[in-house]
Amino acid sequence: MESEGITSPEPGSSKSQIVGRARFFVLGTVVVSAGIAAAIYFHFSRPTSTTLDQSAALKDDLDAAAQSAEQASGRQPAVKGSIPTRRTLPGDPSAERAPLRPASVASEQALGRLAQMVDGKPLSAEQAEAVKLDLQRLVADGGAAIPAIRRFMEQNNDLSLDEVKGGSRVGYGTLRSALFDVLRQIGGVDGQAALAGILMTTADPAEIGLLAHHLEDLAPGEHRQDILTAARETLSQVGDSKATTDVAPLFQILQSYGDTSAVADLQKSLPQWKYYSLMALAGLPGGQGVPTLVEQSKQLGPGGKVQNMFATQMLVQLAPQYPDASAALLDQVKAGQIPDPGWRRIGEALAGDQYQFSKDPTADPAALLSTPAIKTFHMGNSHESFYSLPLDTSNADTELEARRALVDKLLEATTSPAAVAALQQAKARLSSGN
Image (cartoon, rainbow, N blue to C red; front, side, top):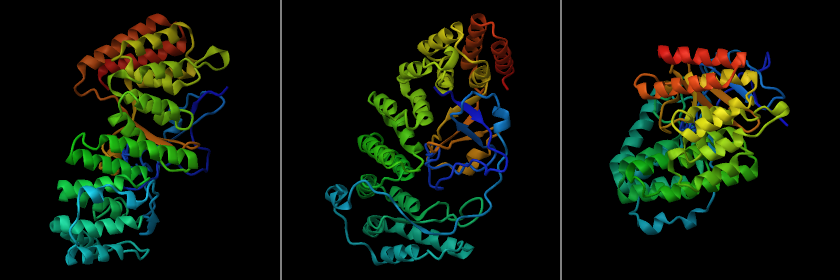
């Protein structure tokens, strides 16, 4: 049986990065992403980078693994990319729901210019301004621009707009993400129908996360079933194809919009995307994921020790809020099932690192990465990428008190020197608010 560990990259190896399109999802993502994207995907090639893997033994080397990563050496050239699809456009229900007028000449010309921006070279400042002007023309044309936008979408191609190192002068990572926002700004029945139609066809997790965000913004709750269907179908498609696509935005959708049936989806995904599944389970409203997290944390490895420490970490994050999670954690401690190296990770979960997806697929990855003490993680085998932030203590007196009380209960339940040291350190950090 395997136990999980946190290990630093081998000397000379490339630093772990969360690579994705700037339109995430991030975290998005997605969160994220993704999130998210961020979903957004996240462009996590920055402040810290950690590789998580399933090594033969749990190693207590989180600090060594969290290394500084260099900023991107340069932008990727503008290229066309093929967008994976789930369904064919002739079945697009938006055509029936919202009959469209012919596109205006101005919109056709603007889309034509935008589609011809592919030259393999970075955009100049003048070109970036021209792109923004054409996007503004499309928004001004309103519903008359939608047929031209839909025809571009039917080609299932995209264009990178990341024309400068460190960000985009245009404000969007890709042309498709820019056009999504154009449709959001147009809004109304036509704008919603066009976004919903794209949601029905795309199998790009980052796009699904971004479309979900826009549709929820325009019509809260109205498209949630379609959003969940898109996430589930795409997750199945990616899983069957063994693709290396970052599916973080899909897990963030299941976490944010799913009902009780989302638990079954996440349980099914555990073998292939363990970290995303566990994080999403921990984020389900009302503690719906706690029973599955308890079940996962009870899996024991050699010597009767916890095998899935990440599941236990998720329980730790929930324990101050949910009695079932707290009781399960205390049972593990009393039974001596926590390995000594795992105690440091429990201490960090109590007073430090809080693992999460990006909450907003439209968020700027650079802004997220500027957060002090952020740590980014990449699971190489399953292509899972996520991050952790320090516990927010700015306005959480009740939560801090609950965490300190939990630390005291854990101290009463163990005599392990490793446990006592980690818990005392966590208690000191919780008391100081740092």
